[in-house]
Image 1 (spheres, one colour):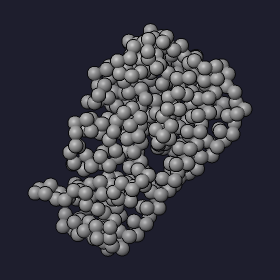
Image 2: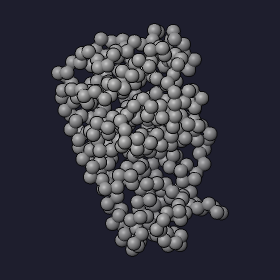
Image 3: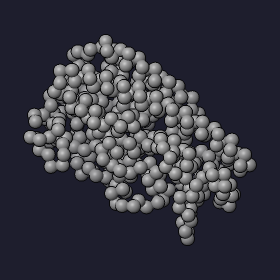
Image 4: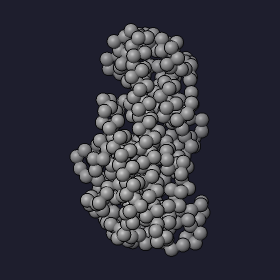
Length: 370
């Protein structure tokens, strides 16, 4: 297979007529989701588990197997079952850290290629692929295919490295153009990034990271909190096929843009449902925790449980303003009696018990896990 020769952006022709209803629906769903984001007083608390879940799902598309529960158990001090699981978890934590860094950067400067390289450097720190020119654009040919694939039997061959700087500069300039519709622009940005495959590893996850970052920078969303990987994981075969077809089919761009707009619409609706369920859970539990503990520290306790829904009972010792360990354990025991919390690892010696806020995890996973 010959290396793909990408179109120069902006692409010359888009068949707008069949896209117009998809654009309208996507904009409505995104606006509704943003209304929910805008109305959340403490998004760092309420959206924390969803942010981790997005990192889990985006990494899973690339082959990792770790679950949200396993990541949170690890952060609560639990040892993963295998070394490969630990590697998966490290990749997911890197993903989350990279997104936080990018959000902070975008508050003071526009998106640029240097930020893209910084994202890559964090994403691959200490994990698989860390020896593949971490934080640097590739200078050799890469390909997409089964392990051991060659240029002859690859599924897709990105552009030759000699032309990569020119294509990347064009991609960055296109990011900042004013286009007829920013969602179609985003569809092109994501696809062109995956076509260029500018790094030797981590391109899939980085390409999905730029989606919420673009929506945030363009002020379509008030925060870069858009969890797109759920829909893409469910439709991964079509996702890959639509991307690869751009370079070889005459209507490849139109079909890809339509698929991407549907993805935005469906995922925005799913995100809204989950975010609303989390908000409702928080309000209900706030009343319940206050009534159960009769403590002035009830809301502080609940906020920490939402930030880290799987946690060791001694975690509150490190939080400023919390009462004594004895008082905290009394509150936690009351919440266990009310079935708000569940023990997943009992205390042993000096090791504290590990507890889980079951309903929150189940909402994020979309199924009963605990």
